[in-house]
Image (tube, rainbow, N blue to C red):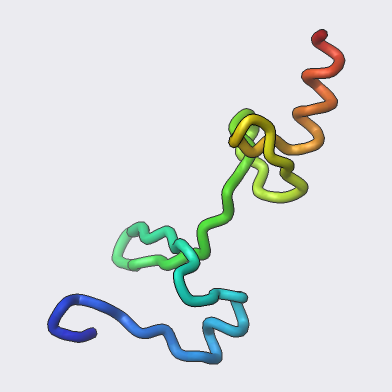
Length: 72
């Protein structure tokens, strides 16, 4: 950690988790651990982080789109 509190992630870790420069990361604490996780935008309805599309600048998964179609 440098004097400004910045941490450098080793290249091997960045490559393994597909983390690129300026990618957003989530930082949270669980018990006595500090956890860094690549930020994965998720569906605004169910929280699913995969198979999402943009709809009016919001991420919605295809499963929730199907459910919405059935409501209308």
